Every structure is written in C-alpha cells, then in structure tokens.
Length: 91
Image (cartoon, rainbow, N blue to C red; front, side, top):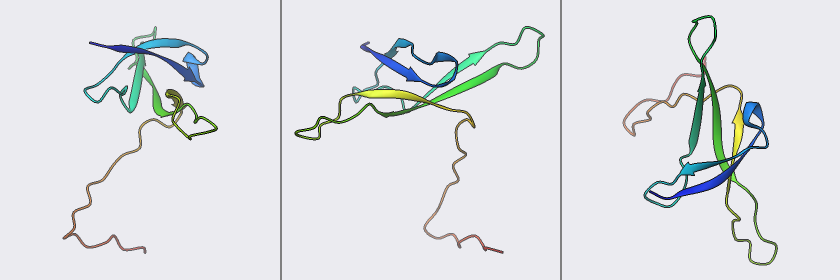
C-alpha cells in the first residue's frame, strides 16, 4: 500500500509529519483518530484530526496536498436524512 507523509496542525501531534496510508482514491482518510491510553486504567482519550487542503497554487489554483487539523470536539454526529422524512420541528 502507498503512504504519504502528512503534516498535523494543532493538538498533541502539532508540527509532526507522519506517514498515512492512502485509500483507493489516492487520498488519505478524511478523519484520523489517535487513541491515547490513560495511566490510571480509565478509558483511552481519542484525539481527532480532520483532513483539510494544505493550500492552493497562485497561478492555476491547484491543491497542494493535505494537512490534518485538530478537532477538539471530536467527530460530529451525522444523522441520516431521508427524502421522505418530515423536517424536524424548530420548537
């Protein structure tokens, strides 16, 4: 499998560049989770990073690659939205 050296911004991995395995499309995964075990036996803390574009070139506007940005709140919960469902009442 191919891997790509991807920089991390924010959180405990700030400034580090780690090799991340690429998926079938040639991109790293959208989310990168780092479990950190606690010394007292409590459940592990999970630090979450989201893949964002590293930047764009000036002339053609091409993307320069990917960077993982720290998300302190963790992954947002997604709800399924079916076309036949009624919209949620706003209260």
